Length: 369
Figure 1 (cartoon, one colour):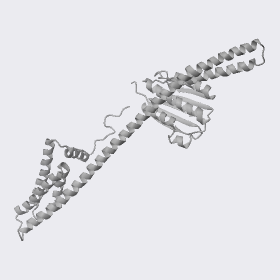
Figure 2 (cartoon, rainbow, N blue to C red):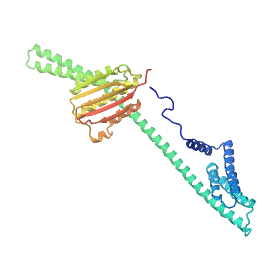
Figure 3 (cartoon, rainbow, N blue to C red):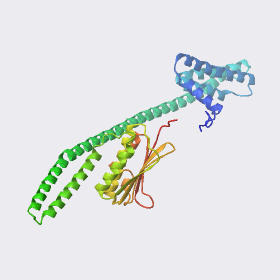
Figure 4 (tube, helix red, strand yellow):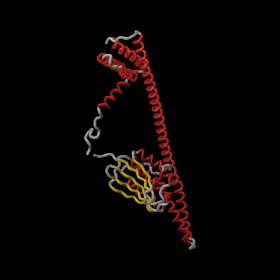
């Protein structure tokens, strides 16, 4: 059941909306927005000057002129801030004169105006400096973010290149095994078979040894074909993943002389061939790592379809992962993680408490509703 719109996203408080509006106002630079910024700033000066006039000479509003001055600096820069500072000083002194303030000397209003103007100019300078530092920091962050994005893109490109090179090398080795070594072994088996027949005709005692030799060569041919088939897999059909994994597990069991089983839990329906291909390669890499390096006697490959997710797990009863491998420094683990990232899947490798290694890859499947 889906939540109604905005059920989990309450409306932000009004001050957040006001802050967002003011940020948009102060960061726009088109002529209409600049006129609006000027009007708002001057309106603030007028409102504060009017309040200063109405309160009379007993209450000073001098500090409140900081608001329009700061607004002017933020909105349009230090030059406009200086202009608003001059207007604010004029408004303050003018309000006092209109209220009939009597000064002991004509120099006094000029002195007060100068002190106020210097105070406002200090504010303009400090605020302008802070804004310049902020812009510099933002520019540095932008440049650093751009550099980091380029670095990440370059690393992803290199990972794809490594993956492509790995696939080409895999195909090249597979062809060499199938067309080169496989054919050579087949010829060797035929030659051995002829030798065994000749020894049988002569009733030579070496005939059983020759036939055992032929059997060993035929076993080597079968292993070579299994390896070549695994290396030459180009793309797995979206509906053919279980069958491909079942055939691979059977071949891997023969290759490593261990038990390698496939367990299916739920119907496996994939929308695209690339999902099936990457999941197959992840399982293949995990099984080969377990068969070559862990000393395992049993490997279980499982496909679990549940709640719109498909989870591939490869578990063995071997020695587990070394510390460096658990930190993800192994090339095979990085390639598996990269394949998982390409299909938007989560990937993890861990050593369970009861021993061995557990490789898990979980991908969300699109809904067919």
